[in-house]
Length: 274
Image 1 (cartoon, rainbow, N blue to C red):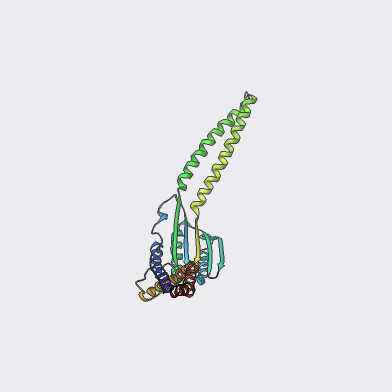
Image 2 (image 1 turned 60 degrees about the horizontal axis):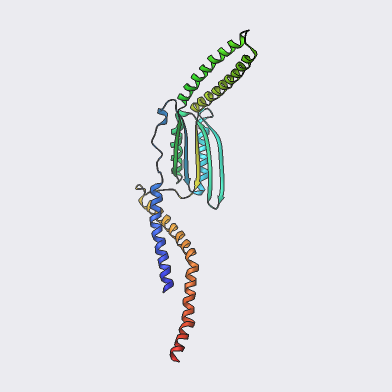
């Protein structure tokens, strides 16, 4: 009786955990990409990151579909800059694909990729868009470069004077070298900002796993069956975990109870009979 009560309590806890856990995960997972239009901000350089979760046998296919979509656009509009595909274990796969896209098609490309993942039974689980005001940076760096150019012209004029003393010439030459380094750094920074405006980086990450699906009213029976199955799997997993944790104590209690029935009760009967 005691063992049945322990097992019943464990199963009840597992069922409650299974029923409460799945809705929390479904509620916290983003199901739609953010509805923003970064292209409406001129002078801002954007970077995109999307994270997808798919059935393990669909990860490679989705990654290949996204690569082919980029290749169809041509190298002037889209270039693949990195790729990764890793098998971590049974039904555990991770992947990554990175691109550089023409800014005017970046957001549309990301939404199209999300649609392909959904068609394969997956979901978008994370999305991030970051921006840098490259236009303002270019303006500030250009103003700094003009100031350095004026200072360089003055230094060169001072160096050309015949009456400049040796100590003064050393100071002027040090100042000239500093201005040259400053100009080179400004040129490099301006080139980097212009490059960030000319091409938009985008990164896709992939992981295997059950799609994060809320209830789909367009297919209620299939959606209900999928959520029920996920709940069953989670319940069994929690039950096995609880059994593993409570197994040794339960066996100890059962053994003590058996010893009591076999030996202690007989001894008490003998004492009472005597």
